Length: 305
Image (cartoon, rainbow, N blue to C red; front, top):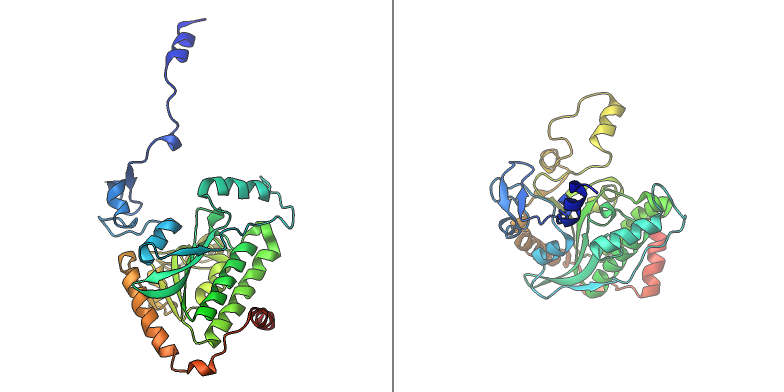
Protein backbone atom coordinates (compact mmCIF):
# COMPACT_ATOMS: atom_id res chain seq x y z
CA UNK A 1 0.00 0.00 0.00
CA UNK A 2 1.40 3.41 -0.92
CA UNK A 3 0.63 6.91 0.36
CA UNK A 4 -1.86 7.62 -2.43
CA UNK A 5 -3.97 4.63 -1.35
CA UNK A 6 -3.98 5.84 2.26
CA UNK A 7 -5.03 9.38 1.36
CA UNK A 8 -7.64 8.14 -1.09
CA UNK A 9 -9.44 6.43 1.80
CA UNK A 10 -9.16 9.48 4.04
CA UNK A 11 -10.06 12.06 1.42
CA UNK A 12 -13.74 12.98 1.35
CA UNK A 13 -15.47 12.09 -1.89
CA UNK A 14 -16.11 15.18 -3.99
CA UNK A 15 -19.60 15.71 -5.43
CA UNK A 16 -20.06 15.25 -9.14
CA UNK A 17 -20.90 18.41 -11.14
CA UNK A 18 -24.55 17.39 -11.48
CA UNK A 19 -24.76 16.94 -7.67
CA UNK A 20 -23.32 20.34 -6.83
CA UNK A 21 -25.84 22.94 -5.60
CA UNK A 22 -26.90 25.28 -8.38
CA UNK A 23 -27.13 28.59 -6.56
CA UNK A 24 -26.08 30.51 -9.65
CA UNK A 25 -27.77 30.70 -13.02
CA UNK A 26 -26.10 31.77 -16.24
CA UNK A 27 -28.24 33.38 -18.92
CA UNK A 28 -27.85 31.68 -22.31
CA UNK A 29 -28.43 34.99 -24.06
CA UNK A 30 -26.41 37.70 -22.26
CA UNK A 31 -24.24 35.24 -20.27
CA UNK A 32 -24.84 37.14 -17.02
CA UNK A 33 -24.36 35.17 -13.81
CA UNK A 34 -27.22 35.66 -11.34
CA UNK A 35 -28.31 34.26 -7.99
CA UNK A 36 -31.03 31.68 -8.58
CA UNK A 37 -33.59 33.37 -6.31
CA UNK A 38 -33.31 36.53 -8.38
CA UNK A 39 -34.19 34.54 -11.50
CA UNK A 40 -36.97 32.55 -9.82
CA UNK A 41 -38.57 35.78 -8.63
CA UNK A 42 -38.93 36.75 -12.31
CA UNK A 43 -40.40 33.33 -13.25
CA UNK A 44 -37.14 32.31 -15.00
CA UNK A 45 -36.88 35.48 -17.07
CA UNK A 46 -33.40 37.02 -17.09
CA UNK A 47 -33.63 40.34 -15.20
CA UNK A 48 -30.69 41.67 -17.22
CA UNK A 49 -31.82 41.10 -20.83
CA UNK A 50 -35.37 39.70 -20.61
CA UNK A 51 -34.44 36.30 -22.05
CA UNK A 52 -37.14 33.72 -21.30
CA UNK A 53 -35.64 30.54 -19.88
CA UNK A 54 -37.69 27.37 -19.70
CA UNK A 55 -40.15 27.18 -16.82
CA UNK A 56 -41.30 24.14 -14.83
CA UNK A 57 -44.91 23.10 -15.33
CA UNK A 58 -45.78 23.64 -11.66
CA UNK A 59 -44.29 27.15 -11.75
CA UNK A 60 -46.30 27.83 -14.89
CA UNK A 61 -49.50 26.87 -13.09
CA UNK A 62 -48.61 29.16 -10.18
CA UNK A 63 -47.96 31.95 -12.67
CA UNK A 64 -51.35 31.66 -14.38
CA UNK A 65 -53.71 30.55 -11.62
CA UNK A 66 -54.85 32.37 -8.49
CA UNK A 67 -53.32 31.06 -5.27
CA UNK A 68 -54.71 27.68 -4.16
CA UNK A 69 -57.31 27.69 -6.95
CA UNK A 70 -55.85 24.97 -9.19
CA UNK A 71 -57.25 21.45 -8.86
CA UNK A 72 -55.55 18.70 -10.89
CA UNK A 73 -57.52 15.98 -12.67
CA UNK A 74 -56.53 12.60 -14.12
CA UNK A 75 -53.15 12.48 -12.37
CA UNK A 76 -53.60 8.71 -12.02
CA UNK A 77 -53.51 8.03 -15.78
CA UNK A 78 -50.39 6.07 -16.67
CA UNK A 79 -48.86 5.14 -20.05
CA UNK A 80 -48.58 1.55 -21.19
CA UNK A 81 -46.18 -0.01 -23.68
CA UNK A 82 -48.45 -1.27 -26.49
CA UNK A 83 -45.54 -2.02 -28.85
CA UNK A 84 -42.97 -3.32 -26.34
CA UNK A 85 -40.74 -0.63 -27.78
CA UNK A 86 -36.99 -0.78 -27.18
CA UNK A 87 -34.24 1.51 -28.51
CA UNK A 88 -31.22 2.12 -26.27
CA UNK A 89 -33.61 1.52 -23.37
CA UNK A 90 -37.05 0.01 -23.14
CA UNK A 91 -40.03 2.35 -23.12
CA UNK A 92 -41.03 1.07 -19.68
CA UNK A 93 -37.56 1.92 -18.37
CA UNK A 94 -37.79 5.46 -19.77
CA UNK A 95 -41.20 5.97 -18.16
CA UNK A 96 -39.83 4.81 -14.80
CA UNK A 97 -36.79 7.09 -15.04
CA UNK A 98 -38.88 10.12 -15.96
CA UNK A 99 -41.32 9.40 -13.16
CA UNK A 100 -38.42 9.38 -10.71
CA UNK A 101 -37.14 12.65 -12.19
CA UNK A 102 -40.43 14.58 -12.31
CA UNK A 103 -42.70 12.73 -9.90
CA UNK A 104 -45.29 12.35 -12.66
CA UNK A 105 -46.43 9.66 -15.08
CA UNK A 106 -47.07 11.87 -18.11
CA UNK A 107 -45.87 15.08 -19.72
CA UNK A 108 -49.21 16.88 -19.23
CA UNK A 109 -50.82 18.39 -16.14
CA UNK A 110 -54.56 19.06 -16.51
CA UNK A 111 -56.95 20.73 -14.15
CA UNK A 112 -59.17 23.68 -13.47
CA UNK A 113 -58.52 26.89 -11.65
CA UNK A 114 -59.09 30.62 -11.62
CA UNK A 115 -57.10 33.28 -13.45
CA UNK A 116 -57.84 36.64 -11.82
CA UNK A 117 -61.22 35.20 -10.90
CA UNK A 118 -61.95 33.80 -14.38
CA UNK A 119 -62.67 30.06 -14.24
CA UNK A 120 -60.58 28.11 -16.74
CA UNK A 121 -59.59 24.59 -17.75
CA UNK A 122 -55.78 24.55 -17.88
CA UNK A 123 -53.46 22.11 -19.66
CA UNK A 124 -49.71 22.54 -19.14
CA UNK A 125 -46.96 20.50 -20.78
CA UNK A 126 -43.94 19.47 -18.71
CA UNK A 127 -40.89 19.42 -20.98
CA UNK A 128 -38.95 17.64 -18.24
CA UNK A 129 -40.95 14.45 -18.85
CA UNK A 130 -39.63 12.86 -22.06
CA UNK A 131 -39.31 16.23 -23.75
CA UNK A 132 -42.99 17.03 -23.28
CA UNK A 133 -43.83 14.44 -25.93
CA UNK A 134 -47.41 13.72 -26.94
CA UNK A 135 -48.67 10.16 -26.43
CA UNK A 136 -51.89 8.30 -25.61
CA UNK A 137 -52.18 9.48 -21.99
CA UNK A 138 -51.48 13.09 -22.92
CA UNK A 139 -54.08 13.01 -25.69
CA UNK A 140 -56.69 11.49 -23.37
CA UNK A 141 -56.00 14.11 -20.68
CA UNK A 142 -56.44 16.94 -23.19
CA UNK A 143 -59.72 15.49 -24.49
CA UNK A 144 -61.04 15.13 -20.93
CA UNK A 145 -60.09 18.75 -20.23
CA UNK A 146 -62.03 19.82 -23.33
CA UNK A 147 -65.01 17.77 -22.19
CA UNK A 148 -64.95 19.46 -18.76
CA UNK A 149 -64.71 22.87 -20.43
CA UNK A 150 -67.86 22.12 -22.43
CA UNK A 151 -69.76 20.73 -19.44
CA UNK A 152 -68.84 23.64 -17.16
CA UNK A 153 -68.95 26.36 -19.85
CA UNK A 154 -65.34 27.39 -19.21
CA UNK A 155 -62.49 28.61 -21.38
CA UNK A 156 -59.65 26.24 -22.28
CA UNK A 157 -55.99 27.23 -21.99
CA UNK A 158 -53.22 24.94 -23.31
CA UNK A 159 -49.58 25.80 -22.67
CA UNK A 160 -47.42 23.83 -25.08
CA UNK A 161 -43.77 22.91 -24.49
CA UNK A 162 -43.06 19.80 -26.51
CA UNK A 163 -40.70 18.14 -28.94
CA UNK A 164 -43.64 16.49 -30.71
CA UNK A 165 -45.21 13.04 -30.88
CA UNK A 166 -43.62 10.29 -28.77
CA UNK A 167 -41.86 7.84 -31.06
CA UNK A 168 -42.11 5.00 -28.53
CA UNK A 169 -45.86 4.82 -29.15
CA UNK A 170 -45.63 5.23 -32.93
CA UNK A 171 -49.07 5.48 -34.58
CA UNK A 172 -50.82 5.48 -31.19
CA UNK A 173 -49.09 8.80 -30.56
CA UNK A 174 -49.89 10.23 -33.99
CA UNK A 175 -53.57 9.39 -33.48
CA UNK A 176 -53.69 11.93 -30.64
CA UNK A 177 -53.24 14.73 -33.16
CA UNK A 178 -56.58 14.03 -34.83
CA UNK A 179 -58.24 13.02 -31.56
CA UNK A 180 -57.48 16.34 -29.85
CA UNK A 181 -58.30 18.34 -33.00
CA UNK A 182 -61.71 16.65 -33.26
CA UNK A 183 -62.44 17.41 -29.60
CA UNK A 184 -61.52 21.07 -30.14
CA UNK A 185 -64.10 21.23 -32.93
CA UNK A 186 -66.75 20.31 -30.35
CA UNK A 187 -65.44 23.08 -28.09
CA UNK A 188 -65.80 25.54 -30.96
CA UNK A 189 -69.35 24.36 -31.65
CA UNK A 190 -70.14 25.01 -27.98
CA UNK A 191 -68.99 28.63 -28.51
CA UNK A 192 -66.25 28.41 -25.88
CA UNK A 193 -62.83 30.08 -26.24
CA UNK A 194 -59.54 28.25 -26.56
CA UNK A 195 -56.27 30.13 -26.01
CA UNK A 196 -53.10 28.39 -27.16
CA UNK A 197 -49.82 29.49 -25.56
CA UNK A 198 -46.65 28.47 -27.40
CA UNK A 199 -43.48 28.28 -25.33
CA UNK A 200 -39.94 27.14 -26.04
CA UNK A 201 -40.01 24.66 -27.72
CA UNK A 202 -43.27 23.81 -29.50
CA UNK A 203 -42.42 21.41 -32.30
CA UNK A 204 -43.51 18.34 -34.27
CA UNK A 205 -46.93 16.77 -33.86
CA UNK A 206 -48.00 19.24 -31.16
CA UNK A 207 -47.41 22.24 -33.43
CA UNK A 208 -49.13 20.35 -36.28
CA UNK A 209 -52.35 19.86 -34.30
CA UNK A 210 -53.97 21.53 -31.30
CA UNK A 211 -51.24 24.13 -30.72
CA UNK A 212 -52.28 25.95 -33.91
CA UNK A 213 -56.04 25.63 -33.47
CA UNK A 214 -56.60 28.30 -30.84
CA UNK A 215 -59.07 31.15 -31.16
CA UNK A 216 -56.09 33.13 -29.93
CA UNK A 217 -52.50 31.96 -30.41
CA UNK A 218 -49.82 33.70 -28.38
CA UNK A 219 -46.16 32.95 -27.78
CA UNK A 220 -43.40 33.85 -25.37
CA UNK A 221 -40.53 36.04 -26.65
CA UNK A 222 -37.87 34.04 -28.48
CA UNK A 223 -39.76 30.74 -28.35
CA UNK A 224 -38.74 28.07 -30.88
CA UNK A 225 -41.87 27.07 -32.79
CA UNK A 226 -42.16 24.85 -35.85
CA UNK A 227 -42.60 21.34 -37.21
CA UNK A 228 -39.30 19.94 -38.46
CA UNK A 229 -35.94 21.07 -37.10
CA UNK A 230 -33.93 23.74 -38.89
CA UNK A 231 -31.14 21.33 -39.81
CA UNK A 232 -33.60 18.93 -41.47
CA UNK A 233 -35.25 21.76 -43.42
CA UNK A 234 -31.92 23.17 -44.54
CA UNK A 235 -30.71 19.77 -45.75
CA UNK A 236 -34.01 19.13 -47.53
CA UNK A 237 -34.30 22.40 -49.44
CA UNK A 238 -30.56 22.89 -49.87
CA UNK A 239 -30.62 26.57 -48.92
CA UNK A 240 -29.87 28.76 -45.93
CA UNK A 241 -32.80 29.73 -43.74
CA UNK A 242 -33.77 33.34 -42.95
CA UNK A 243 -32.42 34.92 -39.79
CA UNK A 244 -34.68 34.25 -36.82
CA UNK A 245 -36.49 31.44 -38.64
CA UNK A 246 -38.96 29.49 -36.41
CA UNK A 247 -38.70 32.04 -33.61
CA UNK A 248 -41.79 33.72 -32.19
CA UNK A 249 -40.85 37.13 -33.58
CA UNK A 250 -40.46 35.69 -37.10
CA UNK A 251 -43.86 33.99 -36.89
CA UNK A 252 -45.58 37.15 -35.64
CA UNK A 253 -44.04 39.18 -38.46
CA UNK A 254 -45.43 36.68 -40.99
CA UNK A 255 -48.90 36.53 -39.42
CA UNK A 256 -48.75 32.98 -38.05
CA UNK A 257 -49.44 33.92 -34.44
CA UNK A 258 -51.58 36.65 -32.89
CA UNK A 259 -49.28 38.14 -30.27
CA UNK A 260 -46.08 37.82 -28.28
CA UNK A 261 -46.69 38.24 -24.57
CA UNK A 262 -43.91 38.47 -21.96
CA UNK A 263 -44.25 35.93 -19.18
CA UNK A 264 -44.84 38.58 -16.51
CA UNK A 265 -47.98 39.72 -18.36
CA UNK A 266 -49.49 36.27 -18.97
CA UNK A 267 -51.96 36.22 -16.10
CA UNK A 268 -53.57 39.59 -16.84
CA UNK A 269 -53.52 38.99 -20.60
CA UNK A 270 -55.17 35.57 -20.28
CA UNK A 271 -57.86 36.73 -17.85
CA UNK A 272 -58.67 39.76 -20.01
CA UNK A 273 -58.89 37.65 -23.17
CA UNK A 274 -60.98 34.94 -21.49
CA UNK A 275 -63.44 37.60 -20.33
CA UNK A 276 -63.53 39.21 -23.78
CA UNK A 277 -63.83 35.99 -25.78
CA UNK A 278 -66.38 34.45 -23.40
CA UNK A 279 -68.63 37.48 -23.69
CA UNK A 280 -68.35 37.58 -27.48
CA UNK A 281 -68.77 33.86 -28.04
CA UNK A 282 -71.77 33.94 -25.74
CA UNK A 283 -73.77 35.96 -28.29
CA UNK A 284 -75.41 32.67 -29.19
CA UNK A 285 -77.99 31.96 -26.48
CA UNK A 286 -77.45 29.11 -24.04
CA UNK A 287 -80.69 27.55 -25.22
CA UNK A 288 -79.06 26.96 -28.60
CA UNK A 289 -76.03 25.27 -27.07
CA UNK A 290 -76.52 21.72 -25.89
CA UNK A 291 -74.12 20.22 -23.40
CA UNK A 292 -73.41 16.69 -24.61
CA UNK A 293 -73.76 13.74 -22.32
CA UNK A 294 -70.76 11.45 -21.86
CA UNK A 295 -72.06 9.03 -24.48
CA UNK A 296 -72.98 11.89 -26.80
CA UNK A 297 -69.53 13.45 -26.45
CA UNK A 298 -67.79 10.19 -27.31
CA UNK A 299 -70.09 9.64 -30.30
CA UNK A 300 -69.51 13.15 -31.63
CA UNK A 301 -65.77 12.77 -31.08
CA UNK A 302 -65.70 9.57 -33.13
CA UNK A 303 -67.73 11.27 -35.87
CA UNK A 304 -65.39 14.27 -36.00
CA UNK A 305 -62.30 12.04 -35.98
